[in-house]
Image (cartoon, rainbow, N blue to C red):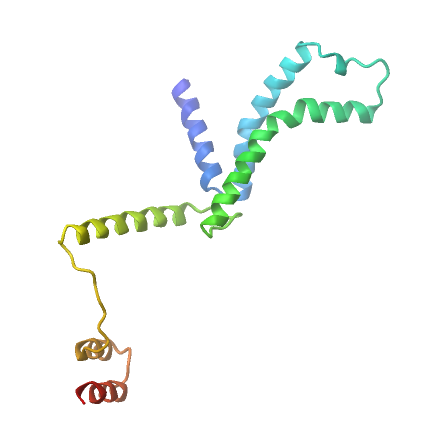
Length: 161
């Protein structure tokens, strides 16, 4: 039972980190509803005097219930959503959509950059330097179809002079 509950919590945490806005709302509810129920039960059972008014108005009761029972458990989730949005803005990711693929691509790019840097530092690979003064560079572009024959001939004439 505990393992299943931990996997559900982990899945909800991953949904909050990577999921779209609606999925995040459901994940927050997964955490918020039980937490609020426990908090409300503890608050009511502790017989806090501010909830025992003689003749309170309905609006005052709603205000007290909101500020003292519903809002405090929501604060961590509000801050969590704020940090998720801050991370996504910082990395240029969508706030509303699922970003699983983008996060995976970012991890792959970071790993490739680290591996390349290690290869360069160990002398296994040389940094690729593009020499536009080399006729082979322009011939490669011509072979790929990136430039026309006239452009290649003009550049060749320029380089051979």
